[in-house]
Image (cartoon, rainbow, N blue to C red; front, side):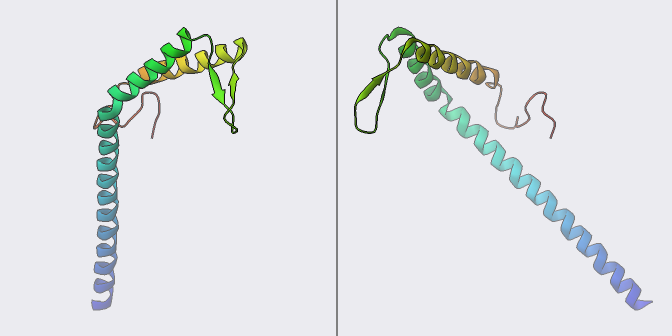
Amino acid sequence: VQREYSAQQTATANQLNSSNQRIADNQSNQRAADQVAKDLEATRPDRCKKAREAYESSINSRRIYREKPNGEREYLNDAELAQLRNVMFGERRLRAAFSFVRPGNTRLPGIQP
């Protein structure tokens, strides 16, 4: 009887330890997610400014180029310019769509964990 009781106590202690570890891991993950959200929010104005400047530059500039490994400039043709503008506009829309991310709000709408 003593052995059964001891085995039961050990099993209960193991379950409690496992449960406590899961809770601690979840809290740690939540703190990390909150910190990431805070960091993103802190850098948001600068990232938005840079994205706006790059987008405006692509719209206003007729001669956008990419630099080749040898340092030469390769100018984009009309199709490449249109594609670049679509990508940049899409990124702006994506940032706007996810601008709701705030510290403590780590869930994305429509996405289940």
